[in-house]
Image (cartoon, one colour):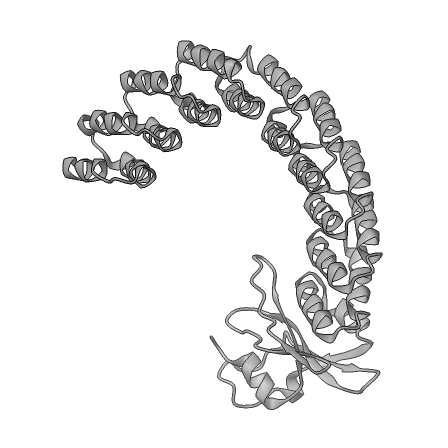
Length: 382
């Protein structure tokens, strides 16, 4: 390993040198760590030096951690110092944490200072984090740069108690740029209570830009209750642009209640663009039952046994059923496909689409025209 450390130290590009030291760190013997640390401290670029220090930190002996902290405290770049303090924090003792906290409070850049305080708080003695986080939140609310405020709020959110989350949410709602406001709201969402999610949802629904509103709705969707999901779906259905509406539906459908799925399916079927309709149905299908699909298509269902070709090596597939469209009389095979079966094609009007579903824990669905060649592809083992 000594030769590896020497080779890494000879790399001229500092960013690459830092990356190599970080990757070597888990494998270095103790007698090589001092050499690696010395090489890391010799880096002149602040960000590269921080990357190397924090990459080595989990593996450094305690006396070398003190050296790494001393180096971190001399970094002039505010953002780099914040990253260094956060990266070293898990290895610091009580006295070292106190020194790091004092340094974090002295950082002049408001975003970097808040980030450092937030990152140090979980490692502080039990009587300190609450006050440090409250101070960090006060600093965050006062950040004038809206992107910085959004970043700081999402960093803080996992550590805030309910009463401070209310203050954080107010700060997010005060962001005037819609894009940053959406990111702040969706970043806070996993940590909000039901009434706070209602406030976030109302803010999302009030967004004037369709793309921003869709990002907000789909970002909030995993955390919404049934009534809140219904409101989000109603907003998605009201979007006039079909492409945007399709995007909203496919983002919401994994989180909709069972009684809300038919409305999403009906909206997909009503789309006038065949390609978009087919793709949206493909995206919705894994979350729908066969009965919902057949009913929505105006079809009747029957076993597939009588139509299954005799030759396929996989044998009959009783899990598939056929449906007949009332409007056209066309017959389709429909149903969930367990491995190793796969559907290669789906027809919606004149459009053929790949219907392979990759989502975990969701059965693949087939909607294919009844024809020997197509059913052969359905039955063919991968």
